[in-house]
Structures are given as structure tokens and as C-alpha cells.
Length: 337
Image (cartoon, rainbow, N blue to C red):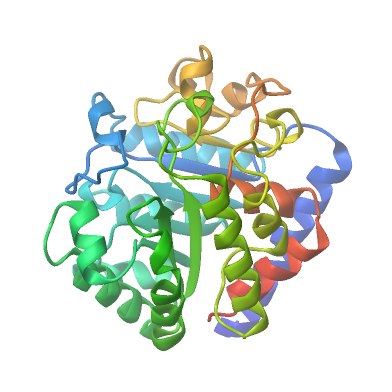
């Protein structure tokens, strides 16, 4: 089967799986994020993830999680951290999910990307690289000179290898005035650009937004993104997400979210949570003890909270609710910028 026919066949099969799960009404792990590690080689000003670095599942345990969730209906497998590529087994784990028929995605800061992309290219469908603004802004926020250069090299190389590429900028007072530069870079180098507001904690959404990030600033971001879409710039956000930014600092109701019902997150030590922002809000099932497929069914719902503006979660939620504008935007992004 040719590459194009295989891609089309996989897309049809995945679409059929999603349709069947939505029609059934049963909780199904259609999209799972595997947080392989909380360790990171950078120390971003706004991120508290590395402070949680502790126990991690070994390769066999993560393989088991992937296999059990594939059997339960997994369609999209996303791998993240910390910095996922700090784990030497990350490419093999991504390959395992790909071999099982899942669409694969990797979130990375890009520092380690240039040395591993050729290995990843045959098994990686999407790559998202953190890029918080122009070089001076990005490197200052992330605490390491040369980070912007590495991230951009990773994006360019990945696109050359045929991987669908995008950047994501975590918005705060450090870069909210640099949105034009973020979008211009994406247009120049051929990748989609996402943004999302910084939170006080990566593990407790109840604490809300970064205190210095005003609702007025986010409304301005929404206006600029809307204008940029009309200009044909590669804005990753769907129209619904742009509208959501205007509702800051409260983004709705977690009880309507598909987290825990259609998508979820496997933490490094094996616990399963609806999303990482819910980590501190409860006691969550351990997939190592009872099976990851069973753990998913025990996440329950609806969740309690005032919503979020975490771009990957919001876009997944909208697609899985079959919001027309979000579905169209997602299909368009898969074509490449």
C-alpha cells in the first residue's frame, strides 16, 4: 500500500473509531497524553513541572499502558513531559503507539530534537515545540541561551521530514506584546502557532491564571488572533478557542469537558488523571495496579472547576464534541502550515 493510501486508510479507521465511541456514549480513551517524565533540561520561569520530578514507570510499564489503552479504543497518543526526549526510550514508545494504529504526537522544548528527528519521522505524525517569542524573550524565560535557535531548528527539520509541525507559546507579561513576532515566524518557517495563558500551577487549575496576566491583555490577544486568521497567518487556535480567551479569567465549566470521558493523562508514576490541572484536586487511580483501561473508567465525572485555556485540552475537547469549526481547523492543521 502506498504511503498516501495508508495515511487515508488510517484516517478513515481512526474516524470510524471516534464515531463509534461517540455514538456509544461510553467513556472511551480516544486521546491519551503520556507524561513520560517531569524532568526537564530547562527551567522556565512559569513552569513548576520539574519540581514534581520523582518516580517514573519503566519502559515495560509504559508499553503496557499503551497496549491496554490501544485495546480500549485509543486513537491519538501524545507524549510529553517535562522534556519527554530525556528518556532514551521515548522514540521506541512513540513507535509502539504508532504501530498499534494510533496517531502520534510529541510535545518538546526542541533542545534535543535535531539529533532524534530522523529516527522519529517514520512514526511521528505531529510535533509541537515550545516557542515563547523572539530569541531574547524565549531564552530569558526558559533560562538557557540558544534555546530559541534549537527550537526553530527542530521545527524546520521536522517539517522537512514530513511531520506536521506547530509551536506553542505560553502567554504572560513576558511575551504578550510579542504575538506578531510569534505569528510572523510561524508564517516564515511554515508551522502552525498556538498560544495559551500561563497558569499559577501546572497541577492545580483552581489557582487560576498567572497573576500578572490581565483579562484585558487576553482579550487583546483574541482580537489579534482573529485578525491574523483573516490575514491568512498560520494561527493554530480554532475560532472557539479564540472566543474563549475573551472570557478570562474564568473559562467556563470543567463539568462540560470531555477530560476523563474521552481523553486523559497518564502521569510518569502510573496514575491516571483527567488532565494535569486536576492532579491536585483528588486521588486518582493507579493504572499499574488495576490496568490502565480500568483506571480510565474510574476517572468519573463531571469534573469540578471553572474551565481552562490549555490549548491542547481545549482543542481536543472541542473536536470530540464535534464542534464544526474545531473539526475543520484540526483537519486543516494536519495538512501542514
